[in-house]
Length: 248
Image (cartoon, rainbow, N blue to C red):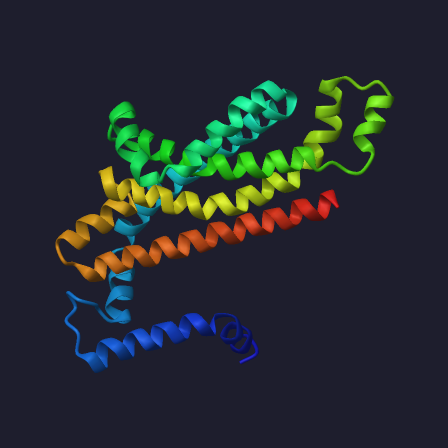
């Protein structure tokens, strides 16, 4: 009972959604092709664990690889823009252009260039993670502790020394914020790419199930995607808090 109360107080909205879902299907006498009840969806996940786990592992690995590449590229480009006004004038507009193009529009282009395989999915996730990292890292590079940059200049620190000992450490919390934001976005970007052009993974699994009107499988896939995105967000949020506690 002591454990049940905190659980209900934290997840009551999710439980309410499940109850409303079940009542809607039952009272409306909806066909499973239109909307299955929650229990059949959960039963499909439980009775086919290997199918879900295999595709989920591929999607999550692809998402993490894309996020890692996007975060590293975003941080690197932000550092280049900080180091040179000329590069800042060139790179910032390009970043804005890429951020304004919908991911859906980029998928066919990248698929033609890279091929219809996992590399394209990784590239799509990397693009989705690049701009938030570029923005937050750039903000951290400019938002240094008061007077510290002047102090380093007075003491004769080289640009490399300022970057290594002052700028990069001050930027780490902002990079962690971008990581928290891009990790769940990366999962959704991977799902979208797999849905449109993939041959495996949760996105492809959803498309294949929906095309057969196997809505229990389709909604089961959606459930796994949601849980994975929430899990990744929670882990990234805890990592951000740990880093902030150390850097504060």
